[in-house]
Structures are given as C-alpha cells and as structure tokens.
Image 1 (cartoon, rainbow, N blue to C red):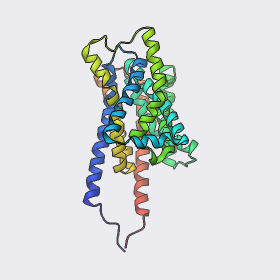
Image 2: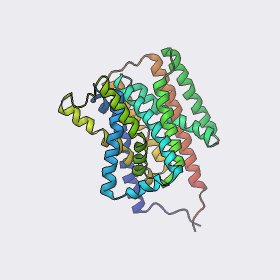
Image 3: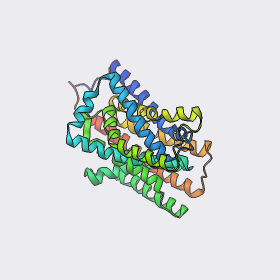
Image 4: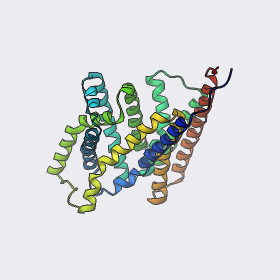
Length: 313
C-alpha cells in the first residue's frame, strides 16, 4: 500500500492559475467601494439601476463572443432554474444597493465588517436550511460573532444594519445559487439574474429622470466613462471568481475570501479616514477572533478529510 501520488504538474498549474483568478476577484471586490465613490454625485439607486443594465449588456457581449447563448436558453427553459435565478437576482440587487449606499455615505468600514461576518452567517444558514451540524469550534466562532454584533450595537446605540444586510443578502444569495448547482455557469447565471432585474431598473431610472434627474452625462466625460464601466466592473470579478473556484480546493477559496474585507478595511480606515472608536475596534477584534477560529477549524477538518481518504495501491 502506498499513499496518494503527489499532485501532477498539470494540477499544480491549474491551482496556481486558480489562485491568481481568485486573488484577482477578491482584490477587485476589495477596492470596489473606491470605484463607486468616483461615480458621485450619481445616487445609489441610479448607480444600481445603471449597473444592472450595463451588466446585462456586458454579459450579452461576452455570450455573443463566446457563442454560448444556448446556456442561457437552457436556464430559461427550466422553470425551477429560472425562479432560482430570479430570487438570486433580487438578493444581489439588495446587496448591490446596500453596498453602494455604504460607499457613498462614508460607511466603507461597515461594508468591510459585513463581509467579515459573511462566513459566520453562511455557517448559520447551513444549520438552518441545510440541517448541517456545527463542530464545537464553529459554535465558538459563531458565538464570538454574535458578541461582536452586541458590542457594536451597544457602542453605537443601534444595530449595525449595513453590515448585517450585506452579510445576510450575500449569504442567502450564495445559498440560493447553491440550489442551482453546477448546471448554471457564472456568465449564464448572471445574465438571467440581470434579465429579471431589467424592468425594475428601467422603472427606477425613469422615476429618477422624472424627479431629481439623471446625473450621468451631466458631470463630464470622465464621470460618464466611469459609469459606463460599471457593467464590466460587476461582471469581471464574478467570472474570475468562477474560474478560481473550479480550480481551487474549498479550503483555499475560504482563506482567499478574506482579502476583500481586509482591503475594504484598509480603504475605509487608512485612506478614507473613517472613525474607529474603541467600540468599533472591539467589535472588529471579536469578529477577527471568530474568523481565526473558523479558519483553524476549516484547516483541521480539511487535513483530517485528506487523511481519511483511502490509500492507493
């Protein structure tokens, strides 16, 4: 009996490529609040509506270039998948709106906290909806996360709604996408999600045009060009993420995901100079302890799972 053979050169190349894709995706997500700050004075609702329509246009271009419209047709012909993508679209639109509101209102640190909390929230969703059982260290990590939210709520006199809304909407988005499984790729999935949102986005833009007025086009060429890039800025990280997820072990993806909130934290605290009073430091510190515990548990479980694999002859 011999142990499993070491990874082949091809597998190592695939994992290196996957790490580059995943790092690029989370890196872009980490700096995304800075991009949306450049779109002021456009309102968050104008930006979200424009982001939806431009994302659909960008996806349509990619589908045409890659000749993969048939994958979109397959999703549309399946009522179950179509409804799943509709629910996913509704959740991601909530996430986008809260995220952009946070960026434009000087709450990038709250956004960062939301994505730090997200892994803990995802663990809880697994318990509630998938009937998964938590290991002891996972329960301790969730407990630290709950205490962090209480500390922040007491310190600020209100529940950290932005952080919870981001963690909740993105966690539920991931849960719903999981129901679609591997049958729906990143590009066809995003296309159908944005198709669902096209009419509401058009209505929002019409209401803005009839009321305060649409800002894009009235604030110079640079602002207009940046606004038009919103579709690509939305789609590219999602496609990079999908490419990385197909090539990397789940444990590696779980570690790389912390890059985005770390970069957002640096952006909010060091570059935008948002306030960090003691209660906020305490809340973040408790969340970081929870994530360290969750990461240790994930690494230990991954190692034990590999050892449990049958030996190859």
